[in-house]
Image 1 (tube, rainbow, N blue to C red):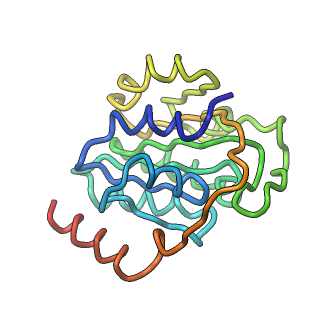
Image 2 (cartoon, rainbow, N blue to C red):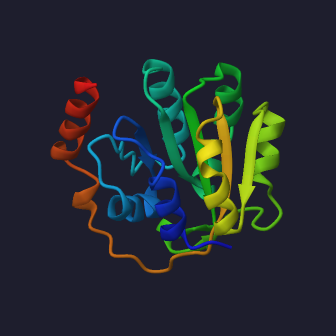
Image 3 (tube, rainbow, N blue to C red):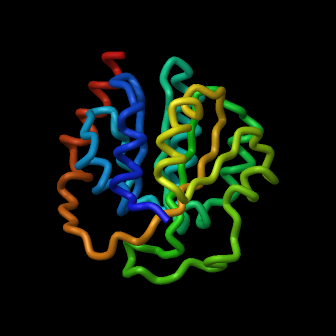
Amino acid sequence: MMDRKKTLAVIARHVTEADIVLPVYSTAFDWLDVRPSPLNYLSHGAMGLASSHALGLALGRPDKRVIVLDGDGSLLMNIGTLVSTAEAAPKNLYHFVCENGTYEANGGHPIPGRGAVSFAGMARSAGHKNVHEFSDLKMLEQQIGAILAEPGPVFVCLKIVSSGEQERDYSRLHGPHVRKAFRDALGAG
């Protein structure tokens, strides 16, 4: 099992200034610490919809790489998005799921099927051809560059440990200033 912040730092080293990143819930707070950017699309408050938002952005902006940093509980709330993404097959979409077996943002309650569900297996069954799973940070470090060079859609399950309590300053995620910064950055590209 991997530490989420260290895992995100590995991914961040391969993210460019032109990439759109959609981090959700607990991951969003850690991602903003690791890699702040006006092209971080913060869909906090829409549990389960980050993958759908990412699909729309990937289809609407094929000139940009779109990376969604999802949670296992969040994905379970919209599991059908795996089928929609596989069907649409955007070459620029990279879906990472942080699997810790909990609804961490809502008190750490266990997700249904914890320990029994295979998110990588679900992605394969939905039609994803490029599917990866990691529980070892060194293996992720070795392969992340190649994974982000594969044609999408790419699905990656990251087995992480729960981070526990977090400082949650929601003003970092919400508000007109956040939306304006994203719109401006997207329009500039």
